[in-house]
Length: 147
Image (cartoon, rainbow, N blue to C red; front, side):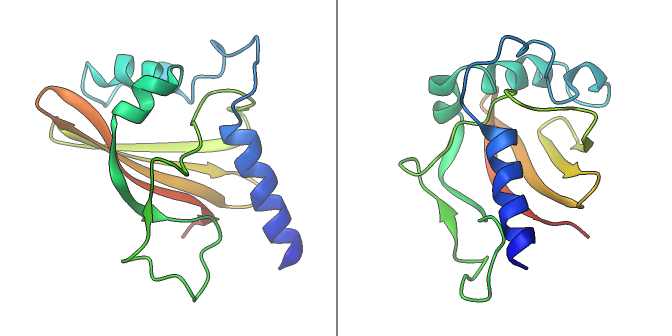
């Protein structure tokens, strides 16, 4: 279990690291494959992952979700992410060949996303919703085993 924990932490750091990377435009979390999402979502998604101020302004804090490697001591119905503890989500250090990306669109105002490590089946879940013509992250489940 300790190896799984260390692997999850490493994957989290690699996936959402905020260090400089000259290949950022190439690592776009499958944005070029977003054919089933609302037209304005793709441009929002790119800006969300490249501008930290924009990102913080487009998250509904306190944000519902689940921390990495949830334990029995944490009630997922009670857990929320705070603005103070938020780690910037970017495309840095993202290898699209290592992850399976699944997106579902529900009408034109809700997009769900899973990004899952192909080898370990550990991944994240996010939900984005559109309110008053603006997209927001409304749910984030950090690196956890996926079903």
